[in-house]
Length: 162
Image 1: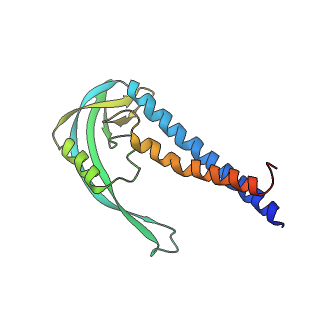
Image 2: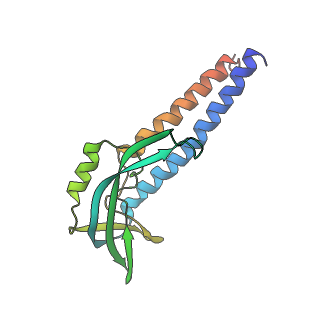
Image 3: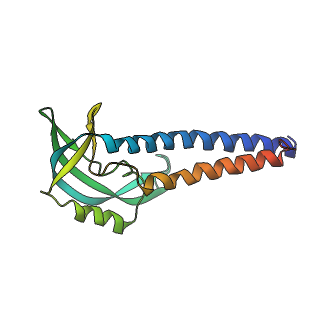
């Protein structure tokens, strides 16, 4: 394979992978944005804490792991006489945050506190305590945009734009 062909091949790979990742992240951002319009009901915090979570690279390599701290929330709410238990504070809970930011959330929502719970009218089991899109919905967009930029640069190096 010639150098130009390799640049072109990897340029297409980076561009396509970045576009796919960007598509899914924008879908999540859109869902978070629309959550501002979700109806709300009153609920009560049952548990608010943090816990350590371990992610393994693969079952065959248990030593390859990443440990992080995540929110561990439970709150109860009722929609149309149906009881639900929610676990998400925001729709960006799965984005890694600092321990201080997580502790602030725990302090903001102590057990026993009555809160507004925003639920998806199409699926009332999906709920959050803080609706909308925040900074943590936008920062993951950096990675696919950089991948796409590298892909375009590689395509240029492969002679596509000359």
